[in-house]
Amino acid sequence: MNPIQRIIDFASGPIELPPAVRADALRLLADTLAVGAAGAASAEAEPIARAVVGWGAGTEARSLAGGTLPCPSAAFFNAFSIHCLEWDAVHEPAVVHALSVVTAALLASSDRLGGSTTDAFLTALAVGVDIASGLGLSAAGGMRFFRPATAGIIGATLAVARLEGLDPARMTNAVGLAYSFLSGTMQAHVEASTALPIQIANAARGAIMANDLAKAGVDGPHDILTGPFGYDALIEPIQLEDYLASLGRVWRISEVSIKPYPSGRASHGALGALADLRDKGLVSIENVESIELLAPPLIQRLVGRPFRPDAPQSYNRLCLAFLAPLMLRDGVIDPRLDTTIGALAERVRVTLDGNPDHNALSPQVLVVQLTDGRTLRKPVAANPGSPQAPLDPLRARSKLDLCRLLAGPNAAQIFSDPIAFATEPK
Image (cartoon, rainbow, N blue to C red; front, top):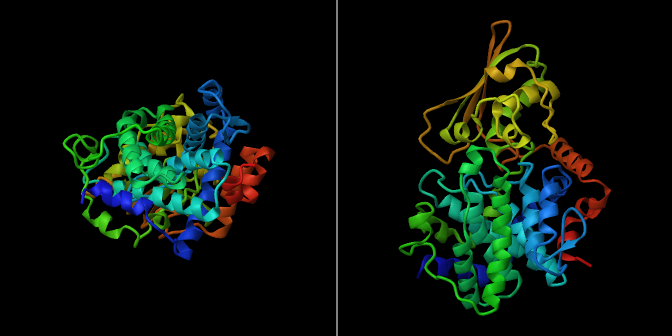
């Protein structure tokens, strides 16, 4: 059977989530909505909100900033808000922010349906995250395109199709149309451009549009993964056998990591290690001479960029040389990112550790040289917030508290009852 048909059979078939997976879906939905609420209130989101108001007609779906928008526009804005502060959950081995695209598309879909049941929403969420993460897990090389968008639109489209009750034939057309919309360049990451979260937003909007076209009877290409011009040939090589064999048995949403800090995930191993050393009184902004992170190539590629004194916040969130001194000084990474840091930023570097895996985010080793001549070495086996190193309750609560503060009082229900917010628009 064609691989995409096996995935569609999974997405359209009867599913009862195991209790632990259902609990993970609820937990990650709450985190994603909290991050989105904080992002929607940020300076980065303000021009996006102004732009999307005029797109289309109707007010079918809610914006995380308040008010309503046409369904595709709401999906676009909410996805942007979820990712714009670099605080959203990520499947590390897949290198896919699957919750961001899938949640935004499902929120818009549920709203225009007049609401959905908790089980239907969470199952669609788990299915979409599974498929987007599965494509990332199947990648056989380093990223050439921005995988959260390219894999995310596939997962989000099938999640919406499930929630809206499309039959397998229309699902096939919807995901084919989504593949036709698919885009996302890593050049935006290289330049730390605002286009990065816009690519997440575009994927969420594309998922809504693809489903609408399929429901209207429009056909799409069908052999989108392994055809001569399919995902494997054009986007990145994928080896699907292991993922397809795991469908319905291993739920990838339970493998997703929560990000404690509003910064690129590749910075979290070093930041968590510095936070631990700071809490023990071993390091401070005054007694650190230099910092070196020995890490896999993806870490260097994503956050090893040089410090720039006049860089925009989108750049700083992806720059370990900026973030490490901030953690030493404040003990926290505030999304507003105070840029008045000292000269230590010029003495932070990321060094390749010889790891041949171009998708690995760990292990790492943090090496801190102190001003008194001592050297501290701290291995990082897993990034904080991952299933292997879950956040302790205090740090998890601190993140939600800061999100709540940034989001403001209009987002109260997102924090008090996130599943009701997602499923009960009225």
